[in-house]
Image (cartoon, rainbow, N blue to C red; front, side):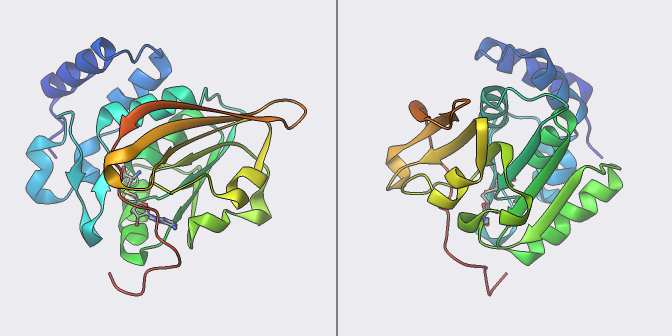
Length: 215
Ligand code: SAH
């Protein structure tokens, strides 16, 4: 392992400077080893504040974006969270430290298997995953207190909005092309009234229809 404490502290100081102030989020970043979620060739760069390539042409998100989206979710230990786009599983592991249970959906079997292995190694037990198309959400487990999507859709997927409970928060990147994406915070009030705010400009891989046939 290359769990380098000095590099990690530098990263956390950088995140604080960039406006991440939630101490629970910062402590999750400090405790979850990012190096075990990245391919071996990139391990020495695991604590840089950059996105890195993972298998199947996907990416592990930048620590700043992971922290920013997690902070927007306002998590606590009572919350049941749906995540779309397990990818490396890094964001999933961060969420798992801060909520009751994470349900995470990925369309690549190989990414899901690799992420499951890491969760086992790290002894994380409050994550449930499945292979599937995240556009459909996880109706059997709905409603969710929080939903996070880590791949960019052209618009807010209607099934996900339907599966968000009242008093719920959904955070997702939305945009038609990669140069035009923004993080959106969608909230449902206690009566189910929906409102949206466009926040940070970002660059995510696209949300793709259906389960992947190839790896
Ligand atoms: N949070 C992950 C991000 C991975 S990139 C991490 O930091 O590692 C986005 C992921 O979303 C990819 O793994 C991609 O395969 C997945 N994805 C894209 N469209 C999807 C869909 N319709 N359903 C489920 N997963 C999807």
